[in-house]
Image 1 (cartoon, rainbow, N blue to C red):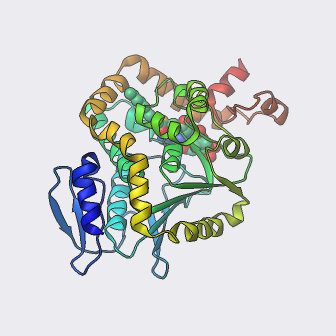
Image 2 (cartoon, rainbow, N blue to C red):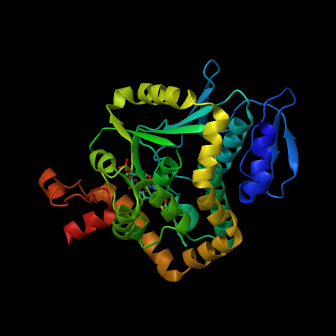
Length: 338
Ligand SMILES: CCCCCC/C=C/CC(=O)SCCNC(=O)CCNC(=O)[C@H](O)C(C)(C)COP(=O)(O)OP(=O)(O)OC[C@H]1O[C@@H](n2cnc3c(N)ncnc32)[C@H](O)[C@@H]1OP(=O)(O)O
């Protein structure tokens, strides 16, 4: 089977080289890098030096519980992305690991998305390095051979929503204060094509069109109705529900599930793998524009101002927002004040 998978990746799925191919045996695990050459990796533990990524491995089931742990909001900074990439590689290489549950150790927040400060007032080299790290995480998670379930235990805007969208199955805590969605346009920025494609593959064209253009953030109930998440459970049952769901995914033989997953996600992954450098160049050019920098600065400041001066919208005010929830948007709050 290892030979079949290798052939598949080297031959029929060349662009997936670089996404991990796993093989059983005593010698460790096989990693096919982007040039198709093989590197032997030793088996190792999952320590994250700063504890910003906590991994609890259940050796009996082969399921790793991965918790993002960067208070206050699990924003995806360059160091966090780098640590996460290392941990994901290690899990992928571990022949005992079959499944990954992604969640947060920070109460009420799954992830606030990309760290705004990595996209502000930095040299182009930094933007370039940061964006490569963002791409890397998406490639590793969306192209992972592991069964991957997101246990969304808090708000999940923008890049946080993207992390969840990379999973095979999403379970969200049914708390009406939580929101999820790709809200980039609300910040005056544009979700890149591979964010868009990941959403499109999950919820379809019409919902993608509405969600992305409006930068909509949805409540858990709305997200369920749009198939942005697959199931809602009470917060206290989230991890047990994710573990139970994982059992269903692990009943399927790994090779059959992995090949099926590759088949479905291959063209989307290739979309980025075939033009990574151009995508980085595009990001750097876009994010370094004065107008975009001003927009981001205004947004970051309004997040802080919101905390200092602005109370959350009242419930009657929230109802007026209809099915598109902007309740957590500082822009919305500012409009309400003026
Ligand atoms: C071709 C070009 C393509 C460009 C594409 C670029 C793509 C970008 C994708 C992204 O992910 S952009 C980031 C979008 N994220 C957001 O809009 C989320 C903003 N945050 C929130 O809405 C809220 O903070 C929250 C997550 C709902 C949590 O609310 P809560 O009330 O619990 O906490 P706050 O008081 O608001 O925040 C605490 C603290 O954290 C700071 N912070 C929040 N989000 C971020 C972030 N994304 N990056 C960095 N820092 C963040 C916030 O400013 C507060 O800081 P303080 O110093 O304690 O005041």
